[in-house]
Length: 295
Image (cartoon, rainbow, N blue to C red):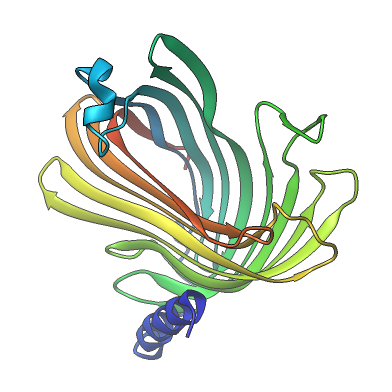
């Protein structure tokens, strides 16, 4: 059984077991009008991330085969915000996520700079409230998103920029006590990155988990696994599957600011590769969070 099947089998019972024990949402009484809707802007995360790897006695590299001789520094910025409309029957969330980072690598007397993180992602999610739980709301959802990047990349002597339209439909638990987001979904992608568009079909499961360790200290984890099944055309760099998650321990400082040690993990396999490749990044981030309730 592959990783997707295991993930889906774990996620589906969690959603439907909770839903089965829940009460359907009650009808709104027309005789007692109440404020049943809200509009809120959330700055979930504005962060500056920093990692560094330093090496001593690099001139004796031949005597330390298990040590890298490269010194590496990475600085990246993250923006994660959304506009959320909520009423008795639905939740509508429009989210903008942006990340960009640069890495400087020193090998001997030579220092090179390369791009580490580059992503712009806009998503619009609609969740229909079918079951109201103490832990959150469960119901069907639909999502439409657009993914691109700040800078272009070169392939075969030509410059390209990521341009992907992605639609999802599935079941989601939203705004739970610990799981702020837990879902399984079918995915349809239209990839316009290259000269010819490529339609892809996939399945995906994802989550956002928050746990208060103690006052002022929160553990936050989010991620997804996506498995592709159908493609319109062959492209060696297209993913067969992708796993990505981020873990951080957010320690409040003052005025919405926090210090957050983090660990990011990314695993993927492309159609043209014989083996999968993974990347692990650890570091510390300075973060800021805020929200604004319009009504």
